[in-house]
Amino acid sequence: MGEAEKHLTKVCRRFARIVPGHEPFPTKFEKSKDPYRALVRSVVFQQLSGKAASTIHGRVLALFPDKDHPDPEDILDAPEDLLRSAGLSRQKIAALKDVSQKRIEGVIPAARALVRLPDDEIIERLTAARGVGRWTVEMYLIFTLGRPDVLPVDDLAVRKGAEKLYKRSFTPKELAAYGERWGPWRSAAAWHLWRYMDNLVLAD
Image (tube, rainbow, N blue to C red):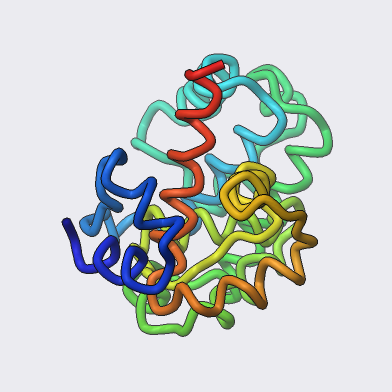
């Protein structure tokens, strides 16, 4: 049992009941992943099934065959018709161009600079780009930067998992306040709430 699991089972008997049945919260992530590339991918994937989004993302990358990923300048210079040919909506094209512009302006920094920033500043910077919401950045914080203390209270599965586990309702604000007791491992708490909901679905 990892350090996160030991903490959660110590501070909460309900977590102590479910955590042993889950794989532990992962502690190693690809921290070097460029936030610009991550946000391009997240914009493409929004409101699409994984398979469809992967196909469109691949088509977007294929529009720039001389490199493994388009630079911000490439996205900004690309005609809308070209980007549309990959399957992107006008709304997503506008979002991608804004993400690219924010990268050029330095609002979205390179990975090496980003990892030194606190969670709140990363959220503020990345959500400044069109089409990038708090949830998207929180997923980046947890699964790319490996930040251990992020609780995505707007994530429906996290909230529903907490409601099932504690047999009470939570607004996002209430869950944020209640979840303070899980710190400094709130990312792990979210992980186990996701696993809990997965198991409930499988049991149905």
